[in-house]
Length: 255
Ligand SMILES: C[S@@+](CC[C@H](N)C(=O)[O-])C[C@H]1O[C@@H](n2cnc3c(N)ncnc32)[C@H](O)[C@@H]1O
Image (cartoon, rainbow, N blue to C red; front, side, top):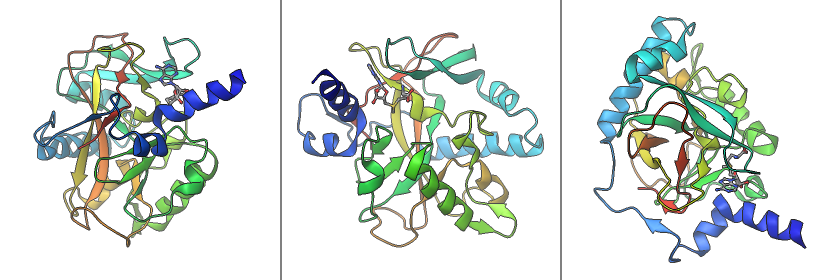
């Protein structure tokens, strides 16, 4: 019985049906228009500059690029929450309020794209308020699907998405946001999820290889510009010092 309770608690922490069925529940907070912590264009410009630096340095010192541009490093390590597995920590410098502290990698499902089987026992499915979902699990069926979609989308010899977040050493050091844990107590969250839409052509093709997201399909129901790609950033809601663990609130729906 206790394992059943434990699995339910784990399951409900993030999985799509919990959000879907409890959307009016008191523990779920809706973001509103104007809630964005950083303007879409500012976020895209930051990613552009960061990815351009990765590219110019030929991926030799991507962590250094992040430190030079944003003043911090982040990495996964055992969470401070007992029994919660791993979390994400600031390992150098500090994250300024309003900075993108991490990205939520994974396959982007829009509208009617099929997600049922991938979502079973999967606590890494993040649902945006417009119904798009990102599956950030780096194992099992989710992993196979991400790899296959990523291998599908290429322009010449350029990939249009990053595969390396599926490993322990992501080329893009920000691509660890799926490991951020839910705040253990109220008001402990120091990052919030924010949708960022990368319009078609906003990043040059040679920089798309650093984007840790790929659309599941190029057809189906679209909620926004059909050519833009949804990325979810974890934006610092206050300054986060070196050594601190990043915490979000899983029950806040994204806008
Ligand atoms: C998206 S994953 C986060 C990464 C996870 N810590 C790991 O190492 O795989 C969500 C899972 O992390 C755990 N978790 C997250 N926040 C938690 C919390 N505040 N207390 C206990 N477990 C938590 C739960 O097992 C949950 O299903």
